[in-house]
Length: 511
Image (cartoon, rainbow, N blue to C red; front, side, top):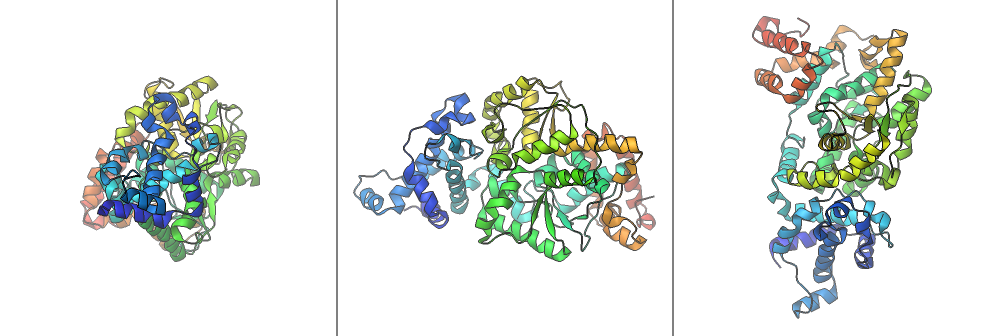
């Protein structure tokens, strides 16, 4: 057996459960799963049919992992898949979001997404997935930077800090004994950190005890669901736990990501070989509780909104009703799309659909189903609790002309909540509640400097690489986008540059 095939088979053998074997054996090849798969329904491409992918894994299983297959293969009676077959077909395991909708149509209830996930892990374990430049970058960036897009801690903290300080806002950083540890997924702090600060405002206004880590800057969703690299995924989960231990928090706050919901509610136990050690609190469940408790004032907006169900949160984790309850508290014009909940079509962006550029043309083509769903509601906005879904939905809205050119139509769910909160706070004259987090209120100056965003930025200014960070921020597209509504951001950047060129004034950013 070729070395790569041996490693591929060894990975399957290690990860296959008894249920997985039943899934592989039970398929009747009836093809009904294709009736639920958007990628197959729109394209009609047999290589995008769910059974095309599972068929290859079944062949490998039967040939190399059963007695009949080993004997039949030796006699030339059973087909023998080769490494060349693995390489030729690898692309199809990522031309799929592993959304699980196909299982709803399967008369045997086979988890095809599970087989796809097993295959991705085997490609990682055999080293074959490194041939794809995007998957390679996710693996290498996670290994080197613990951030799948390759951003560094100064870049993540510096950019978020720039946005917060531009609005005279603060966030709690490295606070020992806070109730919750807030870690943003890489897609969030890479693609929409300017919108993400609205979530910080919500937590501040409600008096939530949280802290941001100055070390853990990614949740590991891409290494878990795109690369399916179990070793690195395990390290990322352990990083969370160790940072929670160090900070003495009680809970982990899960924000902005459907895939992370699935990871922490289901996949983590398999990856770690034990349950994740900390309770998980979904930010949407938290916002719902805060509103019900009266800690987060809201006034219903008139935003005409429809909801996209993230596959990994609704179909695969069962939290779809939570989003609806929350929306009904913050807008009086919520419209369901059809189909919805677990039967909703995938946004086609998650688990690699959007991240791999070679999928772009196909992804946009099949997203006509999602575009038609949105168009039929006649909604002004479409929202989702998942940042990757939101990014994909915005691309779909622009591709199919649902939104005016250059205007956003897709919002993360917390942005809809924020609109209702801001309206309520403005009416009460309490907008200042958003400025300072609970953990920084009534603290002495020394504590504030050590644990505020302002203080953390002062620390960054002492680094020799800070001028390079300033250059990066000044040319960053997200900063440019933020500056359209916050032109003062470049004035702040200039002030920082003046600080670092005058050594005697490096002690504070307030200058």
